[in-house]
Image 1 (cartoon, each protein chain N blue to C red):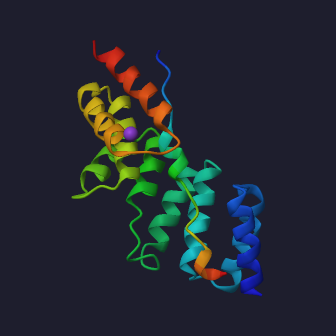
Image 2: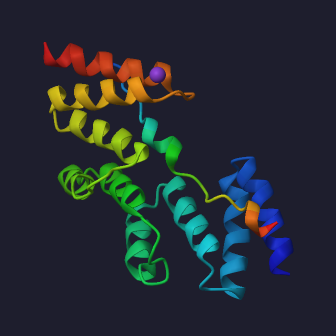
Amino acid sequence: KPLFFDIANNYVEFPSLDHRM
Amino acid sequence: SLDQLFAQLKRFADEGDYNKADPVIKKILKEAPQDKDALLCRLCSLIQQGKYDNALTFIKSKRDLLSGVDLTFQESYCYYRLHKTKTALELLQSQANPNDKCKELLAQVLYRLENYKECITVYRNLIKNSQDDFENERETNLAAACALLS
Ligand SMILES: [K+]
């Protein structure tokens, strides 16, 4: 079975909170 | 105060420390249950903790509060991780103009459904149009699809 990455996991991100600072 | 809690949350978020962020998110939501940023942080936190069923329930229950926010990626990703791969595919394909996050997930969904031909097309498009930290991983995934197609 070839190596295969879950790249999408990296896009499970918090929203930018810059505007709350 | 809410400002202090958000400052704390941002620090943990920047460090990618989801375990420390989660209690802060809960505190914020106790004070401001409809805060969109906090709701989106909570959703992210649930997914990062692997609580995909909870995340899907959360999306359904907060859909009105988060109207105007496109949650297709988050929702499809939960279905993908729950191995409800065809549901993930249908959601992703229901979009007229999928963003790069959704294309990335679509490639993975197609791979798991053994639709290597379309998977390869999506990866070639992503590789041509992306410049980020995941170039090597993407080439590896493309190579995997090519190997299984032949
Ligand atoms: K590229």
